[in-house]
Amino acid sequence: IPAGEKLALVGENGAGKSTLIKLLCRLYKPSSGRILVNSKDIWEYNEEDYHQLLSAVFQDAMLLPFTIRDNITMSTDLDPVAFELAVERSGLSEVINKLPAKEDTYLLRILNDEGVDLSGGERQKLFLARALYKTGSKMLVLDEPTAALDPLAEREMYERYAQFTQSKTSIFVSHRLASTRFCDRVAFLKDGKILELGTHDQLIAQKGEYAELFEIQAKNYRQSAVTEKGVPEHV
Image (cartoon, rainbow, N blue to C red; front, side):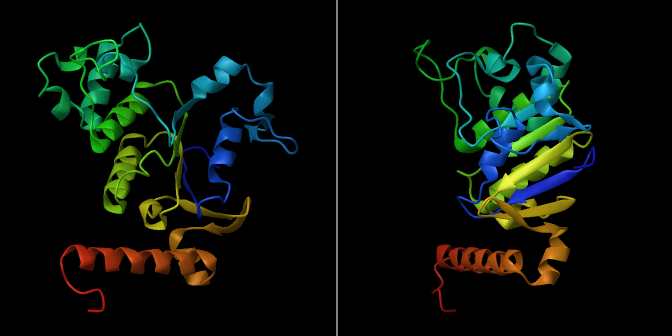
């Protein structure tokens, strides 16, 4: 993956996308093979130094029962400029400004009886702010953190990530093929292997399994949209 490239990692559930991401993040150690960064095995790097290179948001990303500020910075050392920029770019400022305690508002009613919860879309904005605040990272990894959102909302959120992380090498993981069309290249996984690799247009032109699955998903989304508008599905 060249530095600065936006790579989509797509495939159906069980294709091996999350496993590959966990290997890349050194959460799993490979039983065979190697992952290299700048021609060096990632397990030869100091663990803290290597994790500093990564800014990852996972499918099961969680809110912590602390303040909004703490949930974004994940540290006791606050960089006020970086914090304000992350909040503004993520769109979370709109949420924060509606709260009496602003960024000092506690999330969840665990440590504070007046703690608040966030909607799915608001949580994604917080996770984006968290990723943007980690200014020292060189690679952004998104392992389907937007899976709970509808396809259109997921695509908009991914494009927002892409907009504000232009200097980072980025990997966007999704089982929704349309969400990652903006990426430089697409790696289509099946049964733990990269089956097809190229730009979205190249893979569509190949008329292989990626193109077939893309059309199936597009057809399903079109039918869902028609049904939601109250029009019979056969129209």
